[in-house]
Length: 140
Image (cartoon, rainbow, N blue to C red; front, side):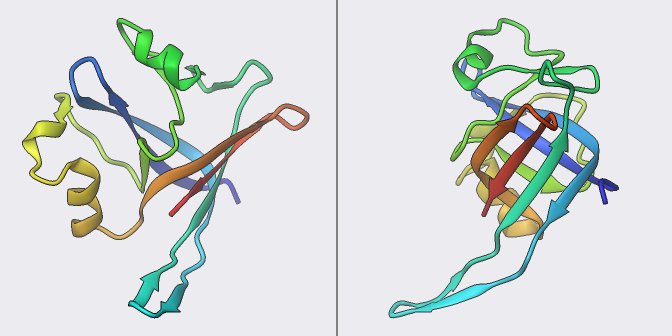
């Protein structure tokens, strides 16, 4: 438990790029599922990620800020956010020496990552729990 690694991809509107943040020591619950619909099979893979934090919403040296405040930052170094239906996570550690520019991908970075890799999840929900300080991040 709490022995997995994820990479969070935060979108920066100012320059239409992605900032990567690696988190070690998270708990990932990722059941596999699919649903049958009248249009065929619907991929129902989902994930729940438990991310331990301090009472001040810090994870290690990184400070959480809400999505609008994150976009207003001139320099996002040292910060992260969790924006549903925009940001996404990848299981494991991803690195990039340069900013990843969204326009470099015909259908977008998320789609390119999802097409090429397993364990790529769009964030659908993010909840803060203060009693036992942690974030619960839902994804599909």
